[in-house]
Image (cartoon, rainbow, N blue to C red):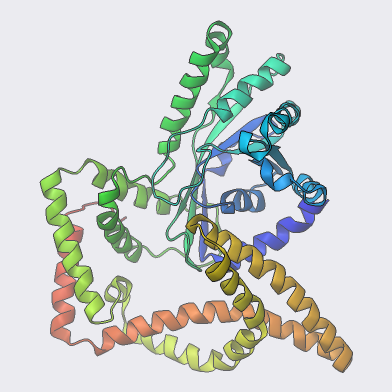
Length: 432
């Protein structure tokens, strides 16, 4: 019940917070079969939220057991399909014993053709890099066969959740589902040597996940890779609508090709490319430019952006004032209470969502008390204007970039365009 209520509200919040969410190859997830979605874990809890909101099936999640300490919260979390997994530090052996019940819950769900989501890395680390995997997904898969040996099969779907900028509002998420791994073929090895079979399935899962995760092998290559990804994104014209795109597979493939190319690039070639890209981005920064403006500027687009900003200014002002309290509260909590970077964006979204719901109800109630149904309608329009204000801020940023380009001397524009084209020339067929 609670899951069905929270899901559409959370989906709306995610579509406001992120500019685009790409879901690639969701059709690979078997229907009416027991499925484990094994995903990477770059943020505290955005990954399960996104998958729960935008897949066409209810999901069940394994989460840290320490958040189930109070019975009130435990009831809410259970209604949201969360299953606790306890660690020794969550309460010693007494709590660890509760995992038998949790795993049995997983086995029953899988035997009923439900879909279970597991964060396969086991811990969260905000890097564009796939970490080593824990063996939990394989253990649960084989445990389901131990409990229900007549299961026809069980599938593990490697799932990559990739962010452009995990802690930025109006950034993008690219989710890619790999080919499902049927577990039954591993059962013969599992019967003779369980540990070997568990390790083999985990290794195979990691190999498959690497196909769906944008993973930079070396930390020292992150800056070069990000420069190239910025250029790649500017070359593309992905539509803004719908905010959840279930068809466009090219966006992930574009960024994946760039990263894989950098990973295998000879060291001398890599250093030369890094020097040229760094010089290019430093110079556009000096002029207040962006790569996107350098690629996309046109006088007509600049005029339309400016006209739209002028016409939309009153609506932006109303929307900003109407939504300022919940957004300010979310910023305060994140800036003063959250210590780990992996929690910044998840906590900000949750605080903003909950406080925005309460604030909206207060505005509607105040409107009703002051002016009846007309007041309710006005309050509703004010809240809706807050959504427009999100778009308005993106347009304003685009106009500022465009205006900076317009003010840049033509000789500088031509020089920068030449530098940019030289960088693109070195990465053929990587941006399409």
